[in-house]
Length: 209
Image (tube, rainbow, N blue to C red; front, side, top):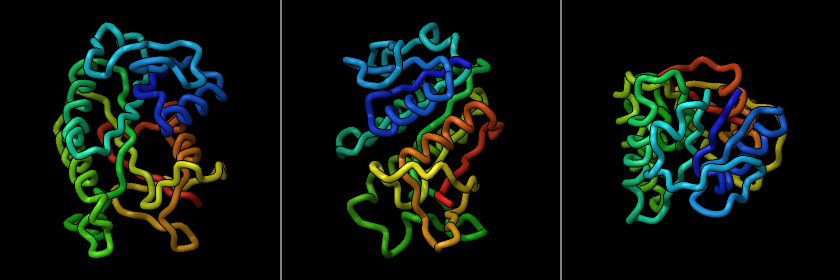
């Protein structure tokens, strides 16, 4: 299996590359500058400059794009649209590193995590931008996408437990009543989905056991 990890130099991207490499997969990092991931092969190119020809030979493209500064938050939508456009009509799967703010907290799917009174104000612009990008992604019937939301507490330096619960559109708690997952365990779930999953045009979520 040939996998490209876009924005492979980021914290999530590097761990996703590492997980895929450890499983013996054929991994290419897509980076703007020097490749700092474990991948031995790299496409050195800005995400927005990628072409259909750049990604045509991959079975899976993982989108690990992240933006936090207010002025670049709209790029969550524009970057995802660009990747969808260049993958349109192909069999290449697009797996997206998503956010937790858009997970539903009721069975009717009318309220999200980010709507809660205790949701940090500082994260609301990011959650809104990512939710908008997800909403636009849901309209793409020409791309084999899967959007993977982490648990509410997404820990960059958390331990790799090797165990996680695969869930759906709603915020799911583990046996301890927690919504938590490390980047390392999330990377396991991402590569599991790449190699064994079939959640085409679905949003799924993961939480540590």
